[in-house]
Image (cartoon, rainbow, N blue to C red):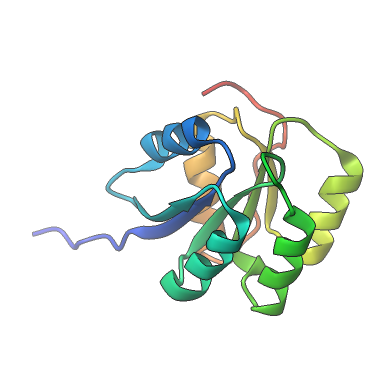
Length: 138
């Protein structure tokens, strides 16, 4: 008889509803449980504090984005060690800022699903994601 594998609890903070739904569909699996999803950074912080996810996927850009403030508040709450930053394009200064703040990975949204799930797995185990920042398709 096999042992049950604990699911990785994932919170998605992504400003665009269609992208948020697509990410949830791509990532929901026996290994990953989507425990929360929001397009609002303030609500994302509330969910992070109440749901205690293992990993937070955080989009930097989007409607009404105040990502620097959210990153500061996640860091103050001791949650940055769980953050994977997702972005549509690479920006070296932005990458430096989020990694210095404590995020564990800075990845493009179009990273292949299996690589994104592996990054989630690595972050949930306390490591930094080893996958390249450049995308390689879904």
